[in-house]
Length: 265
Image 1 (cartoon, helix red, strand yellow):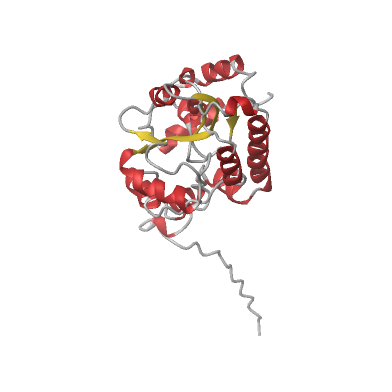
Image 2 (cartoon, rainbow, N blue to C red):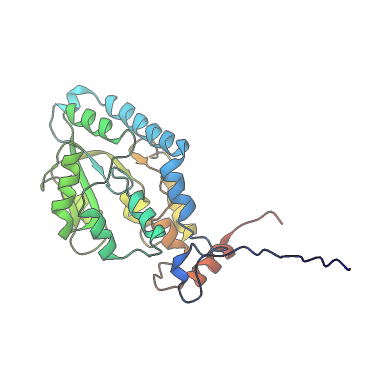
């Protein structure tokens, strides 16, 4: 009697189907935001950079002579999102839900007024205010978000959490006019942000090369009057890659990113 050998080939089962592509994480495909968000949420290096920025900012503030502060007209200007508030939870949720950014899902997050502070932010702002320096929050959140933004500031027990010190975007996204409003009555001794537009108008809607050139021109300000917080998830650095075109497809953006990479061959 002949023996018959039967070989069974076991194939891996992939959950999901062409009819329901959202049911898996698109094996073989990676959301370009995944690594930046994970870096912000898990990397100790990210926390170290935040502490480094606020430690340096504290040194600069403490170096201001008391006689200057007694004049009562000194202020710092700070951005909020990814400078004081950590919104990585919203970005992570978009990835998990296979969604892209939209005004509606952004406002669903801000209505929770649950963003925690970046490491070192609360201590720095409280110490700065305790020295007698006013704090102005200039953010490109929409004016419809004033209430929830104030609630978030208050939840973190941050100083100057009122409408007089919170300047949101009412029309144009440029922050220059709002900085000028502060300068009518105060001398701004420091600006903090994660986007170079938070510091000067010369960076607005400029190309990648132009932004680098402008940053070089201001090299003496970084770490002195200008304190930059890390944000590799989004910002005008990314918009500049696409020449500020927001309607490019994901495939087109991926192609542009690849084209801009500089290898050694």
